[in-house]
Image 1 (cartoon, rainbow, N blue to C red):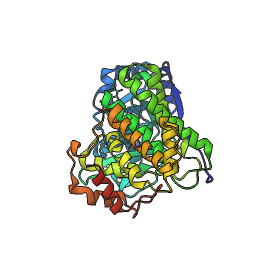
Image 2: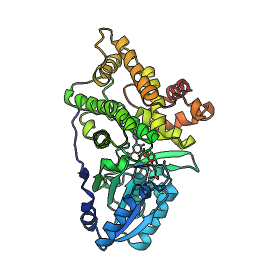
Image 3: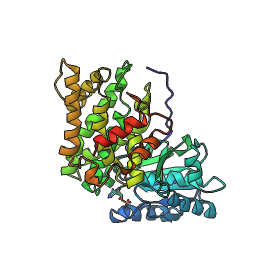
Image 4: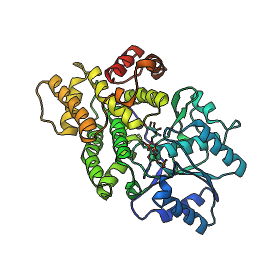
Amino acid sequence: MNDFIFHNPDKVYFGKDIMENLPKELLNFGKKVLMVYGGGSIKKNGLYDLVKKLCADNEIELFELSGVEPNPRHKTANKGAEICKKESIDVVLAVGGGSTIDCAKGVAAAAVTESGNVWDLVSSGTWVTDALPVVAVLTNAATGSEMDGWAVISNMDTNEKIGLGGSALIPRVAFENPEYSYTLPTYQTVCGAVDIFNHVLDNYYLAGDATFDMILEMQEAVMRTVVKWTPVAMAEPENYEARANLMWASSMALNTILDAGTVHGCACHAMEHELSAYYDITHGHGLAILTPRWLEYILDENTAPAIARFGVKVFGLSENSDSMEGARKAIKAVSDFCFGTLGLKSTLTELDIDRTHFRAMAEHACADGIITGAKNLSPDDVEKIYEMCL
Ligand code: NZQ
Ligand code: ZN
């Protein structure tokens, strides 16, 4: 178990009757608010009208940046930064899923730079310590962006999708009403669930020191939550318990509470971001295809006991005295969950992705030479894992 610092200053309002607190939280930062949102889901579910009314009733001046894309583009964030500079915006309000919140973070960071170009920050790997405050209203249980210090921004001109991180990017306040996720299409519900699951699994002790049992148990509880409640949310989109469990699991998975004492891993994420950067696919779907292949690839005598334990604790498999066999069953349980229960397509070929860019993607995924984790991955390893996904 390693030493650690836990510091997450995000204030979260969670539940049904929370939105009346939005104006006072915004006014803590000022009267001029830029609302950032996506392609219109918040207009259909009434959230847009509600935010407008709450702001109008409280003399908050609201500006808008709409049309944030899934896999948000740097150019969209730059448009928002321009509005912030021109209008002297005090606070950026994201209303939507992870893409919207990430874009809002990009806006907030770029707005305080001279160039106003978020890609300057992303491409230079700048750790963001200065940004306009961000407030988030979450509508999709998935990325954890509502409680973390990361924004994943895409530059489609260069086929790059890169994380921008920094303490100033953690939302100051997040509003999480599970009811706002009732309108999610099944596909997004499912992809979000896989994202939550993988944020934990990418970070799970799969080799080496596993002495911090409390954290292991917490990680397993979050993954079990996804396994238990996603099928319920699929069958009953308006099941509050299911949506609430998934929403809080989303926040817990990546707010660093589950990193305590561990080495943060991100193997599947590093590989998936290349798929989205080249093919603009849905993040969670890419993760679902990669995860069982990655587990298969890293399975050896070192990793088998932890993978086998994960099968028992997360999927309720029976204990197996042969850890290699137990691990194989656990990997099959992941596949069955993603491609059976959740109904996702299981190969890259079915998403019209072939091997054309595998080498370039593998090299970019290993930008620092290797991806560290339960087993370090070189570009050759990553290329082989992509091949296993065809
Ligand atoms: O754009 P709108 O109209 O809002 O529709 C969205 C979008 O089409 C829709 N949606 C969201 N909430 C809805 C809804 N539709 C109906 N009802 C609702 N309540 O769902 C679609 C996908 O939305 P998006 O925000 O793209 O999904 P998600 O929350 O999964 O975010 C994915 C992005 O986050 C990044 C991913 O790479 C991807 O770019 N990630 C961000 C992370 C972070 N900040 O820490 C970590 C993650 O690992 C991830 O990489
Ligand atoms: Zn993710």
